[in-house]
Length: 312
Image 1: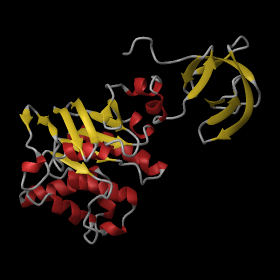
Image 2: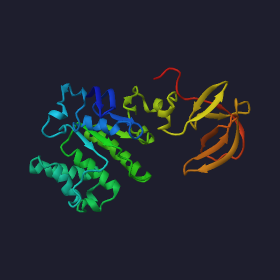
Image 3: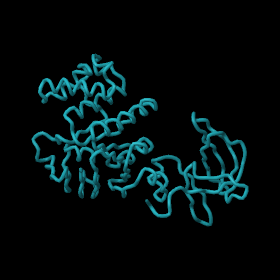
């Protein structure tokens, strides 16, 4: 288990303020926050690249040294894949992986290189130079290099930011396979919360250096008390009723002739496997509802919130 305890970092101002959370073996943790929230700084602290002003990191019951006290920063059992990938651009894919496994005996190095080429679907481009590969291939190669020496924790900094939807979907699959076959603890950060919803066992929000309580992906998505956090995971509707604001996701509704809220239809937008339908509420609010078929008329709805009264 990885334990982060009371981590505080400041650069003229607080960047991380009393960060506490645990990551169990084989667990995927999602950290979501806007740019500048402190996500990358936190990963650099966990990786041993940056020493906190105070706080502690504990891996499997052992206190890890402060990065400032190490001759070469970085923990052997915790590896970070940064946004720049950190590849050797003029060496082939195979050479990049072999270089990362350089400390292994020759026969184990060969075996590990072949294993990672297969695991991350890089075998067909093994002889291609790294700078001639696509963004998705470079991302996978960077992950292969990071796990070449079998760390216990893998940190992924904005792993989906430069990928199109097809490549993101494929990377989801590879991350889940890594967790299963390598038994890795994976911590991934993103400013696009929807990227981490399906992957994560647990989600935390990071906002101005402070971390939220632990949430399941379901509760993170449907618990709408904190609007800033909720918007990081997608569209949030708001309707004002008796000076109260009622929030709901685009799928949290039912059409009813006796519905409480009258919506005036404006337009429908086709997004492939679903539609977004735009309406005007009684208080001139823009309301967006999702559906499998387009809407073409005005109607009444009841809001059906999916988040339970008592958190799970």
